[in-house]
Amino acid sequence: MSFPKRILTALGSLGLAVAGPAATAQPVQMTVQAGDPKLQISRHIYGHFAEHLGRCIYGGFWVDKDSKAPQQGRIRMDVVEALRKIKVPNLRWPGGCFADTYHWHDGVGPSAQRPKMLNMWWGNTLEDNSFGTHEFLELCSLLGTEPYLAANVGSGTVQEMAGWMEYLNANDDTPLVLERRRNGHPEPYKVSWWGIGNESWGCGGNMTAEYYTDVYKRYATFAHNYPASPPLKKIVSGANGDDPNWTETCMKRIPLGQMWGLTLHQYTLPTGNWTGSKGSATNFDETQYFSTLRNCLRMEAIVSKHAAIMDKYDKDKKVALLVDEWGVWTDVEPGTNPGFLYQQNSLRDALVAGTTLNIFNNHCDRVRGANLAQAVNVLQAVILTDKDRMLLTPTYHVFDLYQVHQDAQYLPLQFSSPDYAFGSEKIPALNASASKDKSGAVHISLVNLDPHKAIALETALAGISWKTVTGRVLTSAKINDYNTFDKPNAVKLASFTGAKKRGDKLAVELPPKSVVMLELR
Ligand code: AHR
Image 1 (cartoon, protein in one colour):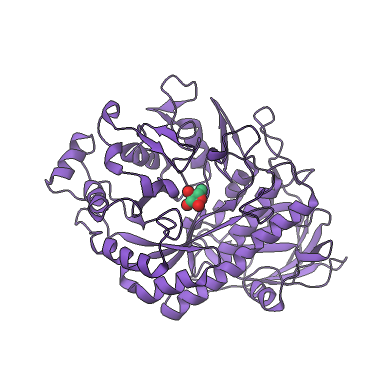
Image 2: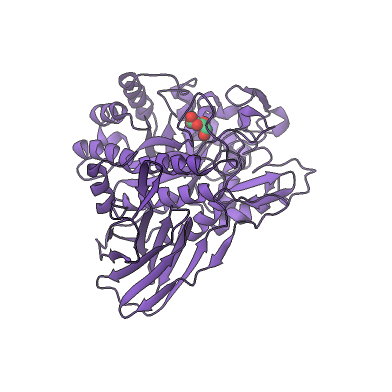
């Protein structure tokens, strides 16, 4: 498939690739523009997701008391330490599809007395509710992250959701507040991010958009602010992929004052098939490498489409678009429980992560939050665990590189990308985004999707003075290289020496299949 001209032009204006001549010895000309000093890349674009699914919570964040993994209470501290290093701005919980079956009150109080439930979505496992609200908020406090709760709309009640909010955010002597205090937390937790339902078009209740918007308004009416806590950020359960009707209906029927954010879920499947094989996480050739990247680049058109609909109803861009589930979704690792969605993570996934985060950065006027699915042991995880062992995936390293963009001033880029051609199809080989942090340092994140050709770049920086350039790079010998528990550093970051100051321009030689972060001071 080649990209229609219309989309390519949009990509270019957003700092992404515009189809141009094939790569030659002539360097790609890039300009870093000054941009609008008030436009920031929200740190919340770098959010993560923790669902009661497979080994994300149990074995990932929360371990048995007799586990040899370092723990505080039962929270797994090696995982916490690793996530602290990449600065997790928000963590979404408890789902996902699980959220619309979850009854929060079963997960508070003395652990031994908590009722058990069957996790009907994910493998029918027996959920013992030992990891509940207090444990999740303790985890968030250890991570230094904003909790993002998803309320049960599909099988819960308005009263149940309103009670959860009162339990967490009120501070008068109501029965729920007294219960919270008895359960060990005298002060309100002050949770402000609230998703009202999840995938209400699917596992969250199979609703029509019209019906959901009525339900949303009813729930939102009873989602109260309490004087002891900041106002709630109420989040509408949004569209599946490129479904414009869902976004249009939500924007048309829900008053702007009743929503802080609207979500979007968009996954990248290597084959593009939900029904047959999605493709292997590690055992793939260039055909599937190419189709994965082509599918991942659809995020640009999808975000643009939803943003344009939102613009019609919300010219001032008050409502945030939150892509609160995204990532690569492959077949599960052979021999593992199909309901657990455990998959490995290769250099290809890192290129998907770098590309997707560049797309979000370049749409930071509307995209003000996103959550990679999922943090540990599920789908495009940044961390995998095996009993007391843990490894960082290639995707983790991209989040490590890109953390410099968090809350930095957005700098637009202009350039024409060379093509990465495969068979009869082509995609833009190069994508990028840039920002300036509070200290004045400029960061440029560059992704070369072409597995064979390096890209030479010559970059001018409008109105930015700088003296030095340093960088780090993530690449590997093969597109499907990945880290294992025996070789946890097979794919790792290295310092990058391919960028030089040439006059007042920046010259870069970007290796094939690589993600590079440059810092100019
Ligand atoms: O992330 C796995 C699942 O994907 C989530 O539970 C659901 O919201 C989505 O369909």
